Image (cartoon, rainbow, N blue to C red):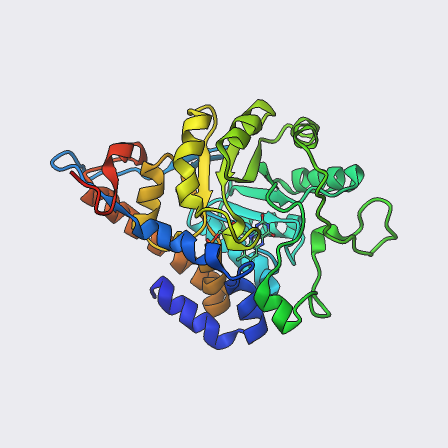
Length: 356
Ligand code: FNR
C-alpha cells in the first residue's frame, strides 16, 4: 500500500475528530501545507556511473547504531488511533530497524513500549521525548523512568513554550483524552497521590540552562527537537545536545514559521558536523529523504504517515510506511549514483528552475 492509500484508509476508519487531531495544524495551517510543498521546490541532480549494487543506507545516531535513516517522530495518543497503540508502533519500528521516539504524551507507559520493541528485535533503539515540566522533580522522574525502561536517548522538545492553537481541535471541542485513555508516563509521579496523573504542562520560562541541567541529569545522549534558528542550533551544541532536530512540530505550533526543510541548510552550517542534525516535517516519499540528507540531515523523522499506517492496519501498516520509505529512498539513492547516504551532497540538490 502506498502512503497515500494508508492515509485514505485511516481516514475511513478513524473518528473524524481524531482524524482532525492528527491531520491538523495550528492557525490557518499554512506551515502544515508549506512543510510538504518545500520538498517540491527542490530537485535532485543525480551523478552517473558511480553507483553500486551494494548500497548501505544505515546511519549511526545517538543511542542507535546502524539505524534506518527514517526515524519514527514522537506523536501522541497511539491507542486512540488503534487498539494496539504504541506497542504496535514499537514492534513495527524495531522490525524495520528504525528508531522509535516515544514520549511524554504516549498512551502506553515507556517500559511497556520498550518491552514490545524487544519482542521483535534484540537491541531496538527507543528514544524518549520529553516535554520538560515546570517542576524539576517531575522532569527528573520522567528521565529516570525512560532510563529504567531502557531508552537509549532523550529528545527534549523546545518548540512548545505554550500549547499550539489547533484550529480543528478547537472547532471540534477536542481538548482532552476520552475516558479510558491517559498519558501513562505521567502516572505516579512525585508529589502526586499513587495512581494519579500529572498534567503535561508547557513552560514558557524554560531556558538553555534548564536544557543543560537535563543533559547533565543523565548519561543518555540528549537531542533537542524544534530548532529552526541557526543561533539556537549553536546554543544547543554548546549546552551539550547530542543532536539537533530541525522541526516546526509538523505545523502545530507557530503558523508563521518557515517550512522545516527551508531551515535545514543554515542549521546544518551552524552545527558544522559537531553533532547529527535531523529534520522532520512533510517527509512523504523516499526522494524527500534524499533531498533532506543532501541538504545536511543525517536522518529524517516522520510523524503523520506513521499514525495513518497505525490507524489503517496497526503494526503491519506502520511497517508498510517504514518499508516503503526505505525502499523508495534506496531506489532514489541508486538513481543518484550513490552507495551510501553521505554520497548525497549539497551540489546534488537544486532549487527548481534554478539549474544552470
Ligand atoms: C506530533 N508531534 C509531537 N512532537 C513532540 O515532540 N511531542 C509530541 O507529543 C508530539 N505529538 C504529536 C502528535 C501528532 C498527532 C502529530 C501529527 C505530531 C510532532 C512530531 O513529532 C513531528 O514533529 C511532526 O509530526 C513532523 O511532521 P509530519 O511528518 O507529521 O509532517
